[in-house]
Image (cartoon, rainbow, N blue to C red; front, top):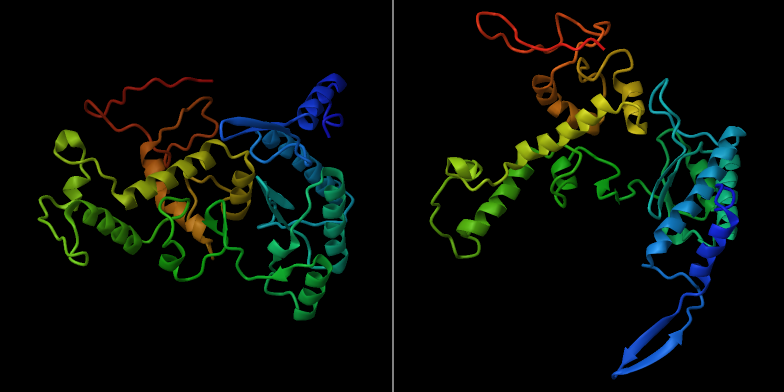
Length: 330
């Protein structure tokens, strides 16, 4: 893989020497025991393993893309004009997307087999699972599960510490997390703040209820104004969502930016977008913070070709209506 990516042969030889010549010594009862030569060479936790794993993952990515270009695999599109997503990688977790047909299932199984032979990283099918869209028939589901040797599931649990699926009971879904990319329900924020409050003042349930010396909203004020600078969880959650909105506003070329634009604001900008029809919970969460970004942002006019005089957020009037600003034409 290193050679195919263009690394020099001498460099590859040095890397392989690091992989193949590792050994350990152990101190027991004050005596050194060793050397111990591991049979599987590079061990988990070795700093070099992270980089080599990423290089191997490039091989898996190349295999998937090659079959995509050949028309043997088809990823998923969330909207017309959106980028096709066939796979998502993070560390050793992989999400693969393909059409629910026997032919594409065989292609996926073959790709994983080739990758395993080339890298030595074998897929644990007992820990893998597959989910289907609602229009897939039951007999097709059984066939695909048999081909891939995996079980079907309606919920993949969490991915990157976020729930893969969100139902109607959002409070239950988010009961185990604190600050993520979703807008947390107000009831959950209040429960978490009650827990924090109980840490300082005690609780009746634990039999150590103390005196409430200060209201919670006062504790959340800055220390300079007499508070403790505790975070208002709802406000902090909205602020974190605002950072994601800012990324969509300034880094639209990213994969997530392209997908969101194709799905929700293909003909406008995120500044002017409205909630729309049947939005996902992620999109609802982002729009809950959009007004903060719009209200606090200003646009550099530049050439003026993309500037809307009537609706863009301009600097407020000062000194009898005269606006003092420096507009750079670039």
